[in-house]
Length: 323
Image (tube, rainbow, N blue to C red; front, side, top):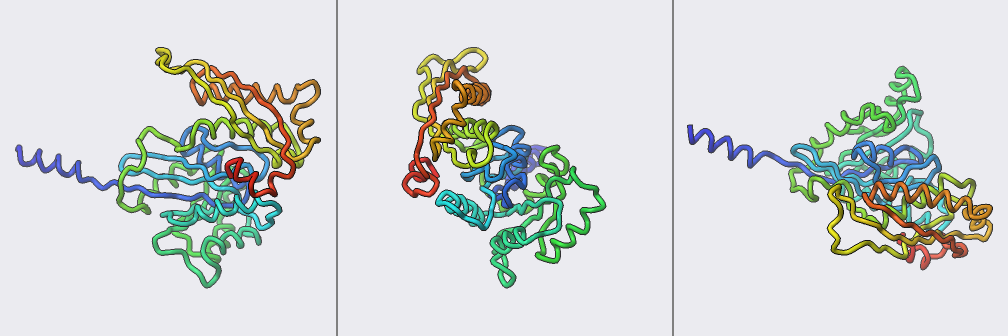
């Protein structure tokens, strides 16, 4: 009896644990950030209706029973690179295709166009190329809630003619339909490995970065045309009480944050500030409320709008702003 219990204990201890990296690749507005947020059950990557919202590679960590999956949300891939910032974003996306175990190629429920074919060629190395045997390529057809199911099969067949995908998943990142099925299959494609992060951690992003992204999201939601893409946010001050230990609810006290919103032209500065400062006040209030939820703290947020002419085309400025 004791021997049996001992063996059972050893089996539990030696149970296989899998871990690895998964990149989410696709066109702008394919729904990559929405998928990551849905998988994690909370917001770690900002989402707007405007293309090219994601600029940096965002890490999301999902720990399951017996597996830990490290996801990488990436900037949307497109061929027209107008600025140094566009080039930096594309480098981020390309780097996220290397040294991973699985790539999720996310598309909309439409027949593949030239843009999708170009991205697939970029991932696989072209018609004569093939991915490393160590990397599995999934086709993830998002936004299936927007089309009839009868229209999906021809789309799947069209993509199957382009590449022998390891798996195909029709999903809706917005509603969560099919996401659990995708998540349930991923561990089988990961190698045996350690738990890279604590099991309660969902992202490795610093709070400063996440707050700066919240502010940028609110600017993007409030403005139009060229303004959203000409904006960068820099946190210049972050102060919070030291040694107070927080409250019984876990709140940490007042966090004082100063941020600069950088734009490329005087006209953009005027748009963000708005008449009598009204637009900036609305942006700041919306950002503060979301930052308080993120930080579980009261937040005092001060924002200034500053001019850095054509910063997206200046390598030094891009580097200074963290890209």
